[in-house]
Length: 133
Picture: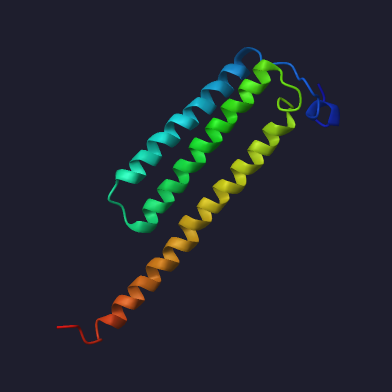
C-alpha cells in the first residue's frame, strides 16, 4: 500500500475500512453530523448578536454537511460502489473541510471585528446628530 501511487487513490473498488480505522471514521462522521445539527438548532434559537449568530450557523452547516458527506462516503465504501468509493474522494472531502473551515475562521477573525468597528463608529457619529421627535 503505497500512498504516493495513483493506483492507491484511484482504485475503482478499494477494500472496505477494516478494524479500528473504520470504526473511528464512522464515529467521527456520525459525531460531526449530530453536533452540526445541535449547533444549527442552538444558532437558530439563541439570542446572539446577528454576526455571531451567523458564524454559529456557518459552523453548524459545516459540521452537518461534512458529517453527512462523510457518512455517504463510508456507505459507498461499505457497499464497494465503483467510482464513488475511490479513496480520492476522502482527500476531496478533507480539502473542502479545510477550505470551508478557513472561510469561517476569516469571517470570525476579520469580518466580525470590521463590522463591529463600523457600528461603533456609526454610534459615535449618530450621538451628535439630531434625533426625531
